Image (cartoon, rainbow, N blue to C red):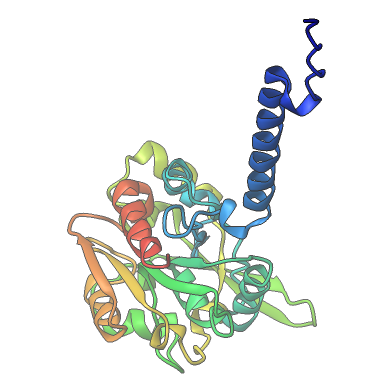
Length: 288
């Protein structure tokens, strides 16, 4: 009997082709899954695991500039926080607050707004109308009630050296007339402003201080944002610029989460940068 030749195996029935076909289908399925995952918003930020950290905006006060935050900026950035430390004009409270408000308008996502000294009055006014500002942090700062000024609050409690330590210089106003700038007398700068820093640091700080217009320090506050936004307060317990009693009063009135460094001077963000950064990050953790 003659043997009949077997019919040729079809392409689909050959073992090698079957393996290749299975691998191709698996690859296509995997590719589809990857495309779906990449298209999903959850791919960029897994829910509940890696929330976006808020931007920390640091506002300096009178007789200082944004460099006074340098040590704090380093610590916040090291912890992964985006940071902005704009220049506070120090001209008048309404104008300074409007300027800061314009900066806040450019920031997407949650914000922790931090103010030192007169900068506290500025953040109290500038945060209004910005729902993305989730926390206010006052660092040895003014937290005025409506119609109060920095000068009002300083004079209400004993202990400030500023009234006897200031010198003034006139300057021309843009619309005509003359304004008055205030400086801390370099001879009194360390005792009044930065007593817990060595003299080798405070001498150049006195020489480079930015003056605050008397109009800014005397400007009445508008409705304060601390009435509607959660607040934190770091009291400088040995402050010779804003009396510690005034700071405790403002912190309690604002219902702020309050910490205190008993021996810290007014520039607590320079002399106690770890503690200052810790308070800011505590506020930031509540925004997620």
